[in-house]
Length: 111
Length: 115
Image: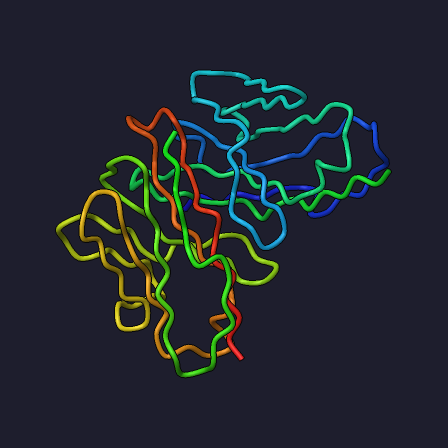
């Protein structure tokens, strides 16, 4: 059974810091991993999608890496800003197309 | 990637009533997914909606409580029936990109409060 966990559960940092959010999954037989952002009470915005054949993906100040063999992915946020404050979720799909979500990291960046 | 329009964005409902949530996609998709996110929790899949057949429900979710319609390849509704305060959650619809290479797209969510 695939289980996805994220650490830390919550993070509060001053503006400008570089951050690393962690995602672990128990079954390495995945074909991709997706990172999402969720603002309070809102839907999910896709940030990055990493295919199983890729090691990392970059979008602006965001960089996500994937190590299938160790069952880990990291989301790196460079030069954090207050606008980055949100909950960050990683998710992996099962063969049935069902997405399994991590527990989330609630990030607060203060000025 | 697909664009999903979900409504209502939020609602406050009396217990015992029902609410229907709609999702409209700007392209044709085979499967649509409905998720629930209870306060402080991550997302849990309720059911998968296929056009022309009954939805497939996950363990713990039943059709009488969460009836789903999928009349065509761009539209689906989820009804939360006979609501109780425990149904207070964010409900989201989602679609998968073509060929499993484009990830999933989510609607903007419906924030439901049952009083």
